Length: 161
Image (cartoon, one colour):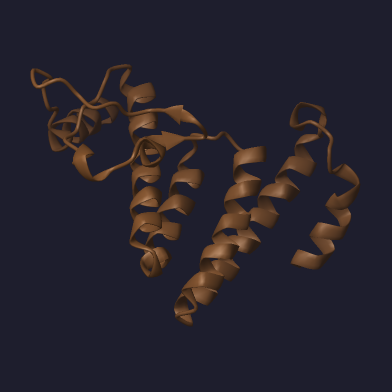
């Protein structure tokens, strides 16, 4: 379906809580998110980064409302937004960190353990370390152990195999 057809069809479902929507309608919203994602990718290929960012942002808003806020799809959109936000380094870093925060949360949920990674906190503001007003990352103490991500991924692959 095209963007215009989907938007006009979904207009009657605006304001209805996600829990009250039939699964097929949620799928249509996610399809609309995919359309915005593809438009953003096309704009990125044309080097129109601000326009690409706006399409990615539209996709993200739908995903955050109709998908899980810590899904891989949300992390992917933040990553794409960071890649096209090179006109604003602060915005790009914020998007990269939000990608990192979501992936960290997903890994922690999968491994059921805490993961610590070194981050340059001196050059970041508190807002950059938040995801939807939830502070997901805090400045570690000097005694915190740093976990080797390569080792975690190797261990995870062994568990799956």
